[in-house]
Image 1 (tube, helix red, strand yellow):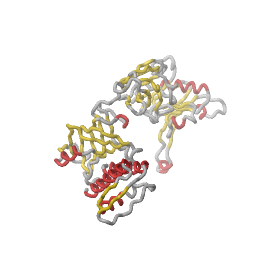
Image 2 (image 1 turned 90 degrees about the horizontal axis):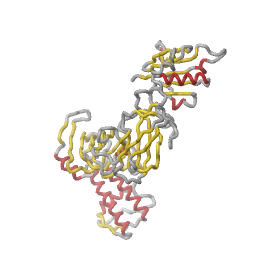
Image 3 (image 1 turned 135 degrees about the vertical axis):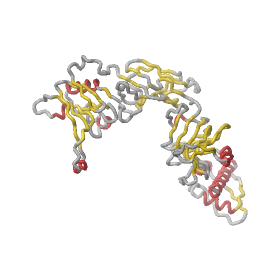
Image 4 (image 1 turned 90 degrees about the vertical axis):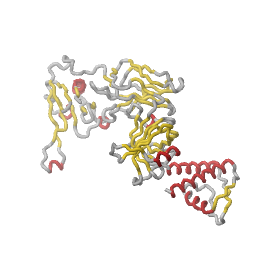
Length: 453
């Protein structure tokens, strides 16, 4: 602990020296020689190659005159500040870590990777305890037994600005315990944090961070569970009352199941650069967006989409708390018996579909070389649906509609298939046929599909 503390003191002294030298180009600083020697050794990697060299002093008291250029002093000061922050982060040694939950912390600053070179972090939250903060300690990560933090922590934490490392696997939550994104957190937000605390510097590697105040910006509708029909007009609503009325808004839409079930893009833009009026009328469509490709309507009882709304220039962000459903205007749910009059029904796993009586269904099998060597029989991996009577000399492949298969992804294989539709993550329906009749049957089969969760 002493070594780390001493390093912090040295860097703070150096920042102060640079600050003074920037304000007064001839500022003189007196530092004890032993302290200065250690300081120079510590800062060898911080001083740019263009900075003036500093000779090792020999007398007991030395007078050092530092007159770097403005750009050099800013660069060195920035690097020194980054070094101070790094020293406040938890290290890789977990032997002296404890599991804690700290409640009611206020975010004073959010530092992103481009501002601080910490490779394994999404961001760093600098926080201070609120007036009614609390500390809970756990025996281990898997233990539910809560204990009060010791008196040393209770006395030390209120005196410090803590550094919290947010990693890729850190769980971020809103006040209502719905999943959040990093963009949902802002300076001045109040948070609760659960994670590993390094007892050398009290830095925390966060496992869970929950915002406990309402966000500055909130999507109100659709907010989960709604069913919106293609071609109808609905109102997208949000609460942006904490921002100016002339703030610019962008509205996006994304499929929560991307990449397995989305259209051409993971996110499309419905509207851009509109005013912060709190609402927008949208005629639901599957294409023709401001930005992005196409989207696919949901099957019955499927909820795949969320609205994302941004206040431009990084001022605010929120998304639907839960997915809503977009259904096609002409989707067939199996109730239109006249359309499929005389058709057969086939069940494949959780999927049911109908097909013409002059077509047939065959199972498709596959076995790996290793399974074949062990005598394991081939497994059913999909279906082939094709006409019973093909033109003379025709290749059955050119007239087949496939269900399932090995490693088929509509996003990847759309350039090879003529039609591809994803029912669920592992059940695409696709064809390579260019025959107009086959493509017509393909559309009808897709419309007849029902899927059981």
